[in-house]
Length: 304
Image (cartoon, rainbow, N blue to C red; front, side):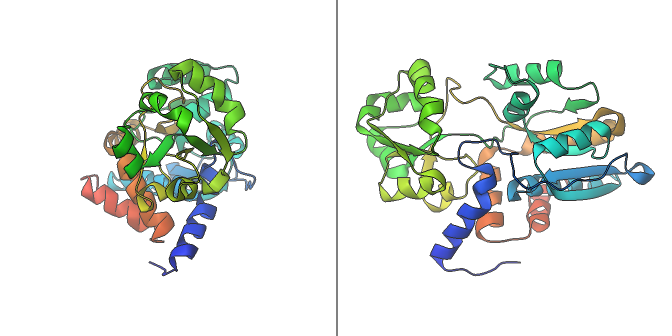
């Protein structure tokens, strides 16, 4: 179902809704925690869980419906809470399948990791995850940090990659969350030789600050619908300044079979960042029901 809002209300609602996965932090960090119960699901059902923010709920709906299409009995436990609760539930078998973000997950299980590329992150997870858990095939889709500009700026200055910013960065103000400069200034300089004229604390309003010219470039998550509604462009991170955070199913190995794995890997094979961005616009901006959006995507990709 759709709800109609004024433009200002829609943008404010989207900003508030996406706070849990924006601002340069960990997509599965949340202050709200609700236990999911313990023990394996009754009757051999696969239990698909999610964190309590819209994108993760949508991904869980996609996983659940893809499994049901293969005849798998599914129990959904959505909007649970943070990774701390979800991870322990998956390890114990209370949850069977979770949508995860590989870079953030590795940082959770290995506080000293320096892995940046997708392959290195996956290798790190294979080494560091508990024996009970496994990450299946990652999707091309990422909910990751980015440096983002307006399309007009990208066209005017010939910007397609973060490396392209080097030639204009010293004339640009960059926006992001309060901790963005302390976390990334040295990283950008070491990785790309990139420096900015000014750093501004724009927080959750970063996409709007880029749009209105308060900053020329900003830190926006790659699946934030404001990229679409503000006609923004996320620059490609060709040297992996930001660690890969591809979306992948985290599963309890004892509770999944080859049918489950195959169905989930088929989802990952079809899911990319532009596609997820379009889906999130429907969920966060248009207020479409996540289950309906999931069904539409699965149908379009011949997975139902």
